[in-house]
Image (cartoon, rainbow, N blue to C red):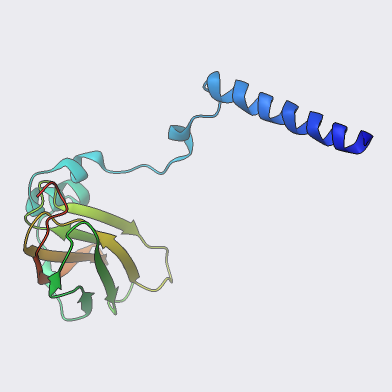
Length: 156
């Protein structure tokens, strides 16, 4: 019976210490979250988003990028998208929806030697092109596919 009481007291003290640290601002989520390019996510166009994210809006079309998305998305709130690339030394993959109010849906930094593959679900307000951009060797490459949306997911 004593060991259970000790365990309870230790757990209570630990929870109390964490609570004090959080309320004092010593443990804040903003200090542990990754940095994100706020200006790129709030830009109002694919070219503006590309410029904010990569410093350039020039992306050349590439058949080495495979963009998999449904032809028709019944619900724009959850559209499955898969992007893979066989371009050597891929540094990042970003996904854009051209007609969304904020086109940049996600951006992934890839570690060296990793496979250039991303699978996610995105929101689409209406029928639009989904654009995948891969940065490799300081250059931007893209692939796009039109996805028709029957029920909008961005307030539509």
